[in-house]
Image 1: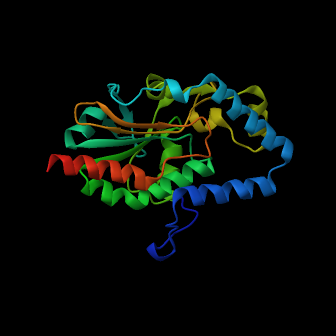
Image 2: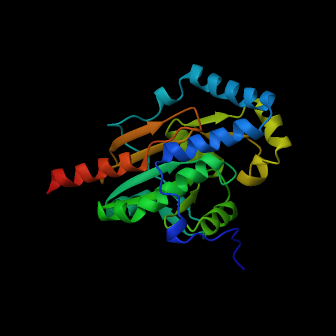
Length: 234
């Protein structure tokens, strides 16, 4: 039996801009999460920003590494196969336990048909196990593949990986966010959220990453990029 917590009809899908959805989730967290816990999360983000991880990711114009990963059903999916069909929109997320990743996934899901119309394929990559990807894919009725990047091997090649600080690890334990269980390894490593648009030949056309996991690019911005690229070819 598939595991699904909720069903959403098209009439009740949240079609607000993504920044409004994420801002609302931040407000809820500020209301219900203890101040000392919020301070630990803020410190973790500040430390990542000080290390300038987002400034050192694979940039626009670089060649994206090739990969072959399992999707939510355990099927191997290769970047060469995806790029043979057209451009690739690649979203790196942390996992199904992250409400900001879920918000982004749902927002991208809404524009997935338009992404296809613009000649591209949408895929998300996370370090979570295939089983966790299956649960997320099913629960949120996603129309695009969720690929499992064991030990963050692909994310590492994009320059996105960091180790969760010890103080934040304690907070995650208290909140029952068990990364070794969710990701299938003991590393406590995660990717900073990032979104790429990759051309047929593997050239990165668009790159957006942020050490602050509560901030993601607008889906409309990604779609506009794809549509402009398509118009130039016509």
